[in-house]
Image (cartoon, rainbow, N blue to C red; front, side, top):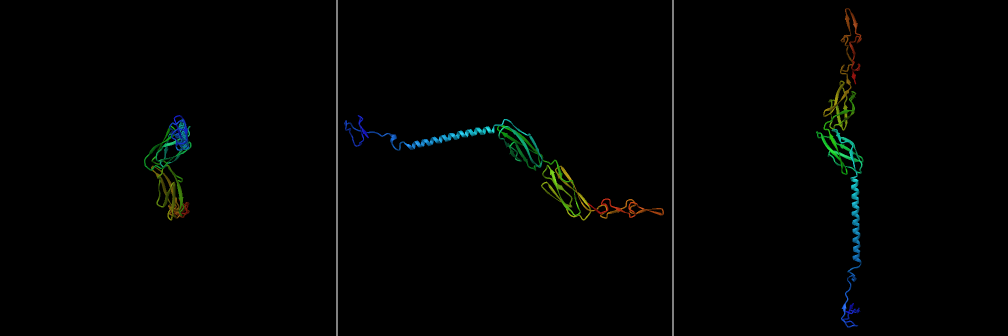
Length: 294
């Protein structure tokens, strides 16, 4: 396209002068936005995508802020926090116990505990487990419970020595043929031991003591098993049937009234002993004359 200074426009680019007024023709520049690559659909599409991405990022930022505010409220909603007790004393052998947690919030947590204590959080209480204390020394620690900005502390102390021990039996009896018995031991310690006579076989497993005795070909015998730990102990009397040790299995003893003579001479007359009937022997009072004692 060309035009002259008088405004005449010609489409023929080969003309050099206006055919109407004779003035020179000059080319008419085309608008920049009319070029296919200078504008149009592609730039507008890029602008639209960028705008959607910005909106998405803004929405995500708002959601994150809202979630953060909600979580902050949940974590810091409590206005009071109390524990059922402020101190616990554990035995040397350890054990498991529960402590109630009273609060008006939504969540609580244990923020600190000793490494020798295990804690399980259950709704409105915590289950505390303490293992055996084999250090030989009293140990102390603290558990901190947190709900928002509120804190409560529980002090835990564990003894280093046993304070009580007892067995399920105080006496055990075996026949002359032998046998076995199981005795349960209860203690607040963790390292109890047992002392026993040589004619017994004793084994320990957890809180049970197995006692065995072989056949007894000799005299009735008795002994004592002592279960002990630190400064406490429990005695178990053990007996096993056999020959009566008083009469040595004979079942008879010399009569104590006549000293085994069977009677007395009074001058020229003889008086028979009423205790032994003149035999000079009486039944053993320990075994009842059987010669055997259970």
